[in-house]
Length: 481
Image 1 (cartoon, helix red, strand yellow):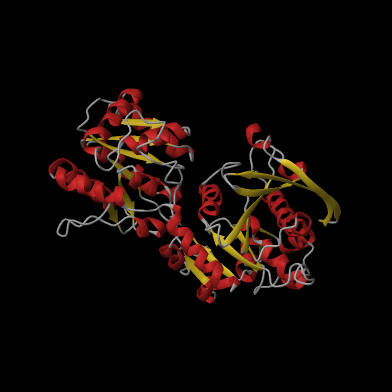
Image 2 (tube, rainbow, N blue to C red):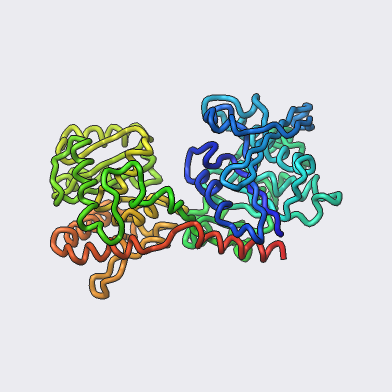
């Protein structure tokens, strides 16, 4: 039995701010229990829901030398859905109303503490993993500490580490002297071949240098991050380690996102009866949002953080042109003020056509996936992306830019071969995006049978976690031997 420990800063069902939590919550459940014992370790945030806190049981506590002090480390445990979770407890680090704060230096101290506490806790919880699977910069110091102070002694001998990059943009950077003081790492770790990058200490870089393997969340993104445009300053290192770098696309939970059993939607449907039933969800949503009620009107959905990364400057540029087409646009999300206000403006200008929902609601997101005909995702970069996987599952045709995971998961429609599960465009250009949207409109209105075949193929695509889990298992086997 091979033992794997997932270490991450968030995980469903305990705490979630983004897609990382879905991966940490879903992937361990799909790894084959006959061969792997997978457990998860997370920080115990005080902002976790009370119902989840009630599941935690005290295991032990100890004091650890950290940042020139003797610091408390509590360990709690819970077993949920057959997975054993552990939690590192220290209220001075994990207090507050949300998991992440705005003070970059404090975040670095907090996750340096977490990384060291994870390794220090292992002998006390009686779990000796063969491999620690780290996620993003918050756990970047685990592979470093594992090679630096924990490699001696029997318990840690031969223990391997993998780091997964969910988004290379976030790296955990601060000046080397301060980070050295906090982490207690020797000075020679802060050189250009280890933790230093462009005069900063960089926690993610530490993880990328010292981990035994690196993964990221799609094949295309794994290639893209080796180039200067996508590499966020680390492309040279990623090229140097390209033999140890692989892309494995994320999955989604097919139980949670299932149009046949979704509790949030008005009319359940499946791949057989969507032609009759899917439109009923659209009418209900049009009514709920105060849009013109017309089942035949093409409805395009957007569920996203409203940021530059997601391509909203492209949408802003052609929004007026888009609103003159025979479509409706439903937007859900929060983010940069200029995009929030842009959508509010167009909802005011075209109240029959545009619905701007500048908040987040799990329920409304499901309704949008189930009710819309198409889903727009024109990202500048997208390591994996989950929204397009959800829209495929609900037979809502994605319109995407060919980058990262979007390129790997959405096959562009080919009218001559009658293949494809969506529409795509290559260059980061507003009118190229508009052309892709209008091509989709044309097929929707003029070739309905072709459109329905695209929906058939979209709903038949399998992006459940089981496919990805088998690829992770292969990698674990390769590393542990």
